[in-house]
Each structure stands twice: as C-alpha cells, then as structure tokens.
Image 1: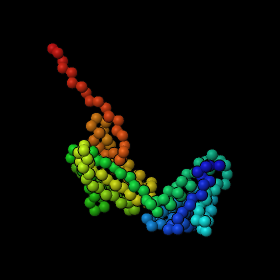
Image 2: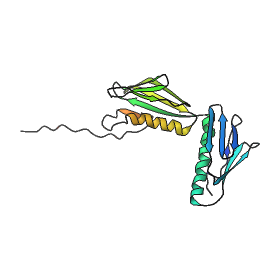
Image 3: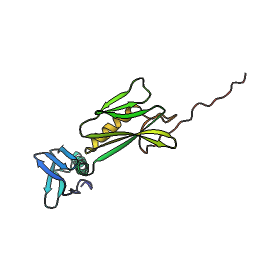
Amino acid sequence: MSRIGRKPVNYPATVTVALEDRRVRVRGPKGELTLDVHPVLNLRLDAAARTLAVERTSDEKFDRAVHGTTRSLLANMVTGVTEGFQKLLEVHGVGYRARVEGGELVLQVGFSHPVRLAVAAGLTVTAEQVRQASGVIHLIAISGADKQQVGEFAAEVRRVKPPEPYLAKGIRYRGEQIRRKAGKAFVSGGG
C-alpha cells in the first residue's frame, strides 16, 4: 500500500470539506478549490476527527500511482486554502523592469516592446524594486491558493526571458543557481 496514500489528510477547523459524488470541495479563508477524484478511488470523510482518507479498490499499478497522487493533491488543497502558496522570481539585467498594471504583469526585458501577461483569477502578483550590492533587481511575487496555478504562472513568466549563461541576465526563481560559462578570451594574432 502507498505510504503517502494511506496517510489521512487532516484539516483545521477553519476549513470545510464537502463530498459531492466524485468531487471534493475544500473551502477555507484563502478561497475554495475543487478536485474530481478518479473512479478507482473511494473517499472517506470523518467530520468529527476532521480527516479525509483516500482508499483504492484494487492493487493495480495505475491504482497505486493515482492513490498517492490524489492524497497529495488533497493535502495541497488544504494547505492552499489555509496558508496559500507563493513563488518569487527575480529580474536581472540593466534596464530590465517588471510592474503590475491593472490585472497585467508588464515585463521590459530587452525586447523592442513590453511583454504583457494577464494575471488569472485567483492569483495575486506584486512587483517591487530591490537594491542589492550587485545592483537593482525587480522582485516578482506570485501567490494564490492553487499550487498548480501559482507554479504554472511562475513558469510562464520565467519562459519570457530565461537566464542566459554568460551574463546571467533574465528572469529566474529566487535562489536558483545559474551555471555560468566563460566568454571568449581575447588572443592577439601575432602577425
């Protein structure tokens, strides 16, 4: 049996969990999330103990895989509606900027035009300028209740201008290490 899948998902008193046929609805202070559960799984809700358990009907390979995955998704939903998730990105480069304008993230990252990305409902995006010893960087904070939605939007922002290996200019996750390459060395051609 899956070690992850057999652990019940505990939820605090501020969260309400409802089962509607094959759909789980989790509501908390940060919002509401839903998940459609695969038919090979059964859910057991214990309102008194405030736990939600995932059980599978057979021991097939696919059933074992979806068992642990579903339990992790449910745990992430509970964490999302209570604490939320956040991703931080840094914009490095001379003249590179990020700002939020009326529901859009506007990036100026070396193209002839600003890149505009629409912020989806359920996400909160902020952009601020931070001074460091190495210069000024722009910090983008993406937060929301849905872990997948936060991660997908952060990846979409990073894809606009990934960090390049020579000068490390571009958009990167906070704490991400960039493997640097040496540039071409100048060698005089004696003639």
